[in-house]
Amino acid sequence: MRKLRIIQCSDAYYPFPGGVTEHLHHLTLALRERGHSVDILTAGYKGAPEREEGVIRVGKIRILKATKAFNLTQLTLTPITPGVAKRVKEVVRSGYDIVHVHGPYAPNLPFLAARASLCPVVATHHTAFVGFNWHKLGRFAFRGLSRRIEANIGVSRVAVGEIFPYYPGHNYCIIPNGVDTRRFRPDVPRIEKLAGIKGPKILYVGRMEPRKGFPYILEAFKLVKREIPDAVLVACGKGPNLELYKESVPTELRDSVLFEGFIPAELLPSYYASADLYTSPAVGGETFGIVLVEAMACGTPVVASRISGYAQVIESGVNGILTDIWDPETYARDIIRVLVDKELYARLREAGLRTAERYSWPRVAEQVEALYYRILEARERGAHWYQI
Image (tube, rainbow, N blue to C red; front, side, top):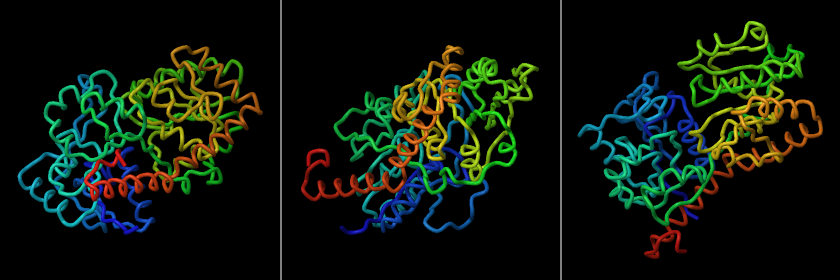
C-alpha cells in the first residue's frame, strides 16, 4: 500500500513533559519506521530548539495552574490569534493524507487543525476527569467540529466513556497507549543507590498531588514494615504536596522512605528495574495505566488501585494486583503477599512482561496505520470506515 503523509497535532510536545508528549513522539517515530512521512504540528515552548526536523511550531503554549473547579493539576492551551489560525490552516492544507489531532475539543491548535483540514481527521482522546467534566460545557461549542472528525480513538474504554456522551456517534474505536519496550526492559543498568539496599524496595512514581494517592501507600507502608522490617519505600516525583508528604512520614519511618524528587526520563527505566515492586495508588482520573505497563516492561510486578483506568491493563491476580487502596490493611496485605510469595511474584513478573509486549509502539502504530488506510479506502468508496 502507498505510504502516507501524516501530520500529528498537539499543543504539548517536547520539551514540555507529559503523557501526551510521549504518546505523540513515540507514535510518530513508529509510523516513520513503517515508511510514512510524519510531521508534528505543535506550539512553541521555552527551551524548544529553534529548528527541528519534522516539527512545525505555531504560537506559544500557555500553562494555567491547578484549579479546583475543573479538578486539573494544570491546563495547557495555545492562545488563538488570527495569525495562529492562518498559519495552522496553511500547514494542514499542504498536501497531507491524514490530519491526526490529540485532544481537539478545546480552544487549541488541534481544534484549529481539525477545523481547517480538507483531508480526513483522526482524533485521539487521552483524558479522564475527576469530578467536573469539561465536555459538559465544551460540547455546545465543539459539536460542529465533532461532525468533521472521521474517527475518534480512545486509549481505553474509560477514555471513550468520558467523551462519547457529549459527542455521540459510530466512529469510535479503542487503540491503546504504547510503551517503548526498547527503553523499558529488565536488563537496564540498576540505580547504584538502590542496588545497595538489602530489603525489598517498593517504588512509587507520580506527581505529589492528591489525585495520585501517595498518602495511601504511606499508610499501607506502615503496616508492611510490621511484617517486612527491612522494606523501603522509594517515592519519585515532585508536585505541590511534596513537602507536606515528607512531613507526614512518621519519625520512625524516615530512614525507610526515600524521596527522590523528579526523575529524568532517561533514568526512569533503571528505577523501575531496581525496584522489587511498583505501586500506583491513584484515586482516579486515569484513562490508561501507562506507568503500570512501563513497570511491567522492566520486569517489576505491580500492585495498583482498583480504578477503571487501571483495570484496562491489569487482570488482577494474572498480570498484577488491583487492590483497595482506601483500606490500608488490604493494601498492605496485597503488597506483602506479592513480596513474600515467590511463586506468585514470578508468575506476575512473566505475565507482566507479556502484557508490556502487547503494548509496544510497533504494535500500536500498526493498529493506527490500519485505521488510516481503512478511512481512506472508505472515503474512496463514498462510505464510512466503520461500515466497510
